[in-house]
Length: 180
Length: 180
Image (cartoon, rainbow over all chains, first blue to last red; front, side, top):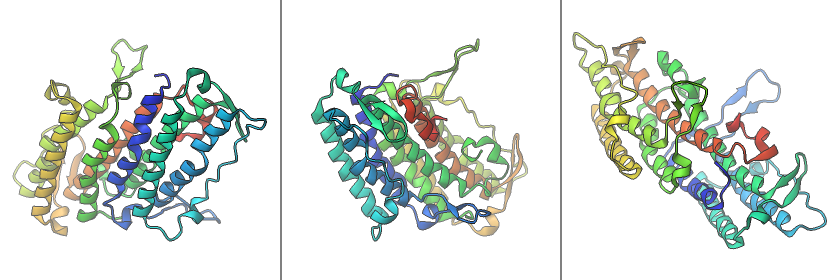
């Protein structure tokens, strides 16, 4: 399937409500962090849904639309500001998961409005920017990645949840690819 | 995390709305089936979301609650009726995805009502039934599997969606575990 703006907006629009439906009614047990590598000296903890929503919020604020702007402006320096993958551990402080979900929904709504207002042409989608680590990327690739990034984090959340019951499903484990 | 009835019901309750939020606004492109192995003589097609919701409906009707009943009754023969993993290709015929999502939500609501009404004790959770292929299983394992099975299919849907853009994300592919 080729990239398409309206198809992409369909997925980007669905994410806030999907996350709210999935997470809104869960108690803490499902959302706690697990230590991934207990043998490590620096405890390697998995991200909680709380951290993931904070990360998605930071993406709306500093990644997708700001980077698209850098590409569209085609200025002298088209290098993106490096994205801080750990910003949410500071920026989310003091907020509840419900607050973060609402904030994400609001920001995502604004991002989609901006994206629609650009009314991007095929030529614009092929314009390039400079990723600080990966090098040249097109606007089309940036917007495709935004969509896949959403799906990636939904997957990360349901996989972490499923693993909580890893020791409870008994012989069924072999049938459940999410536990492999 | 140990199995817990209320915690399990939280996830089982969230699934219908999660699927509706995720799939309700998508156009056909995201929901079509892809041929997984074009070299195979028998085309091996991935399940569409449409097929998955049909499969979840069939599970409500013939798998989870009916099997729990067999265990709870502790009759002479506690062998489960084999589950038909392909029933939905017949039973969903003529229905829209929207209809299937509504049907699933209704049936899941009824299943949860039944589950709650049983007010299961720890002793009951250890009662056993006979899986036709896997052998002895407990009620606790059955109910845990029900929860993980939901999450497994959400994961299956978002993974298939992400793969539609596999060829569009360019150098970002290495950062997106869902595409590996």
